[in-house]
Length: 428
Ligand SMILES: NC(=O)C1=CN([C@@H]2O[C@H](COP(=O)(O)OP(=O)(O)OC[C@H]3O[C@@H](n4cnc5c(N)ncnc54)[C@H](O)[C@@H]3O)[C@@H](O)[C@H]2O)C=CC1
Ligand SMILES: O=C(O)CCC(=O)C(=O)O
Image 1 (cartoon, rainbow, N blue to C red):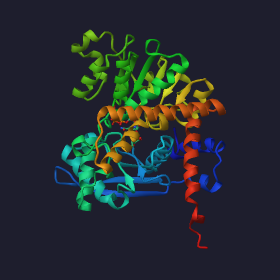
Image 2: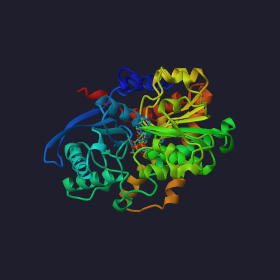
Image 3: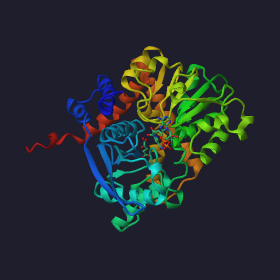
Image 4: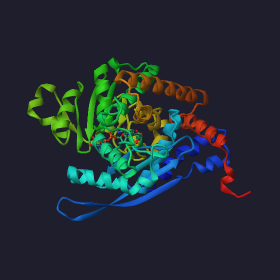
């Protein structure tokens, strides 16, 4: 898709605004990010040279609470992308009724090219650069693509050093030994699974009669594939950035997880001799995976995977967006006209930020929950909000995505009205 990701993302807001009693002022305010910060992060590389990496943090809106959102390390990170991701976080947090606004951060780099020590210096340098912009009551960080709990631990530690006090609640998704929550590592995939379990039976879809393809095999995709496999769904295709594998009988997901953890890419699994007893794994490209004849398609990698150019080839009847922004607005129109149900990112992948909220609450109260407590609360929250979205979609005869935006917008507009506009800073 050519053009701005943010402009495309904003089209979803425009559609939903028609259905919500929101003041023109508040509607207008939501079309722009509140604050966008660009920084340059100097990093001493292992060979002694100095490299400067561009970094970003955007707080899109904080009417409902401090900004909340992950940090992405990827070569394609731009301000436009970070603004879009922060925009989605705003609606996601409102949709789940979390007391947070939306934020996101990122650094433009290929993390696979840096050593662990370089990544640590980079992560700490990022916090040095944005320390005055974040905080447990201001803007709270978390993991996203190519960042993980180890990096969250470094970031929290660096912030604590700068503030000269231990500040666990400034970052979520930390290692459990540093105040992380049980279940945060698996929350995004598990939350998506809870949504599928609640929604698919509405279409008489059950594990025994449902095939699934999952694009992306990281923190989010791997966990949702594992949950579905354990429940008895037939996951026939999986992929990562290098391509994927297809098995008509169903991919052995635990074996694939084991393979991925010991090899850089999944694609090699199709010809690995030690896995011969897995049956007929065939190699598959990402483009082929998106067009597979399956019941459920789960994009769990990056944005702009389903576009106006390939949406027509989609054969799945149900799409559950675990990635942020995998479907362009042009693709959305095509998919909806084909009668395909698209369950949107701001609902489906909200398990991550929901358990991040639980982590923030635990850090602030000093009382820590068991894995069961976390998962029970996650399920309750995800299913409750998904049912409300489903009813809005039925009542107003709109797509599930528009219904999700309407639900979130209702909460946002209530908060904006309650706060008042202060006449947008006019002196009276
Ligand atoms: N980690 C989290 O808690 C959350 C993640 N998400 C979203 O889920 C998506 C995936 O994030 P994570 O799993 O956390 O990242 P990750 O870094 O753990 O994994 C990313 C996966 O996507 C694959 N990938 C990258 N480019 C690809 C391509 N062009 N085609 C196919 N696969 C590709 C990678 O090989 C890897 O398997 C992103 O859109 C992210 O924003 C959303 C909510 C929370
Ligand atoms: O856990 C969080 O705070 C945010 C996760 C995230 O970046 C997302 O939901 O896209």
